[in-house]
Image 1: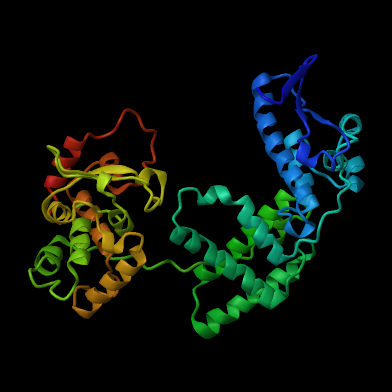
Image 2: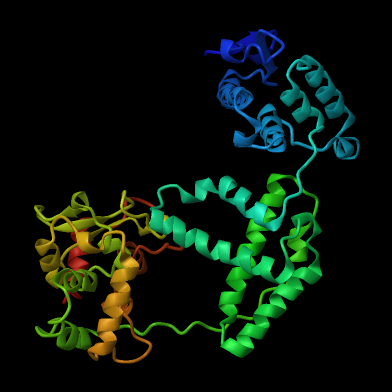
Length: 426
């Protein structure tokens, strides 16, 4: 592999310094021990080191104002790639073994012509003061894996409550360095929320979500920088006793047939929204799952018409087990026949659809009680399965729920699912 070299039993990253930065670097070649005798592991490390060193060379060519990473961040990243945790020099003697200190000194000596490598190994880059606001910026960077395959709207919905938690904490306790956050700051933040519960009728569940978001951000960043503060202990027993959420009531079959499927029920609702509602009735799907169907997910020209509920470029799914194949029957089949390429008007806008339809339901007496909503169609689907004595494994497969027993085999076939749904379809 390019840049990979073996000397004795150890592999090295070895590369000629590019001409573009040759005037900025003291040596013509760059060599770094990968600390392994495994070729496969060396290959992986080589790729990481190459990316990091190229980033460093690029930074040498740029002005200080345009650097995308601080020297400390670079030192932390390089230390991890080499195989060490970055530790400030003051902590090395007390937190690592003598053998590791000796190994670090030898490796630093090998790289005395490469300041960033040497600094990473010996911990000579001073750690920056990480305020709460800066912690949020770092959190976005270290949490990129959580946003894979999410749409712009999903990313925004994920980020907004975390931004709000940080903003509220700063307003109440100031933009403190996270290492200086103490228990009394967190108690002050909690008490501010308790007062809002009393004066504004806020839910304890909302408060707990905000405290948990704040904890996850600060704790993740502290772990990233290997800070010694015990945030797990600081946040202990801060959450409030939650109120039991009001469960949505399911629509029963009679109400769906007589009210929701009445020919005039949706006379004032646009046709696309109306047919999304119909598509939900016999699939039990979440609104976002039906709205996010692409043309390739809709299979009408098959012996058993069906839809593939799976991640695609329009939306991600709530959980891995939400991926499933659903036969189409009754009003749901007719709805998809009218929109064989999907519901373009609401694609990427499930919240807009739900808001519109829930308002329509309320204004047109299509909700039997205040505990009913559009989502009651999914609860009604679950009820119809249960009352038809559908087994737990089949129910989980049709609802996209986790099955709390070991799974063996491929599960129910499309034909078996269809036979099951024929009994309950409307």
